[in-house]
Length: 179
Image (cartoon, rainbow, N blue to C red; front, top):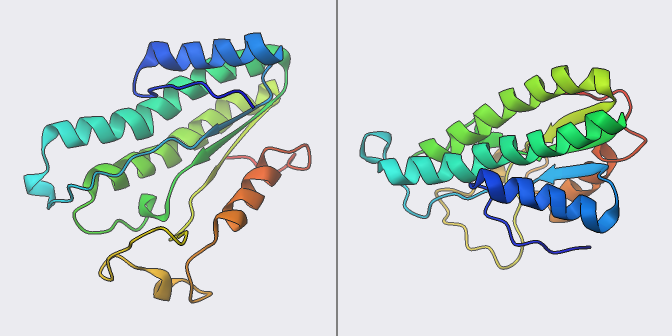
């Protein structure tokens, strides 16, 4: 592993991240776009500050685009790669007072499909994970936001369950699941 502090809302920083990774490891096979923020300042849509909107989309959507584009150029040239975009169920089922986050995840879903269409002919497989609620013990989730009762398995997901799917989507086993 190589830790590289990166503000994914900065296009040049995303390019440096990919370049640094390739310089260190020699090539690039997998990108997982998992950087995201959700503002603790949840407000109704009509009261949402522009700066919260822009910052959320800058990290959640622009970062996915910029890291994905920089990685895809290298992967397509090599004829192989896996990109996994981490979204959220809010791409389809938004929570109240969370328009920037939900919009960024919905746009990420469309971006994932567009990436998949453009990159599959170059040997780069792009997919997304859009989990419902996933909680770790340290999370403090207000009851009005807790959707675990709405899941079919009647509980929140576990981080390891999401990680297992990401590992599959980034592996050589994933050759037919695209977009």
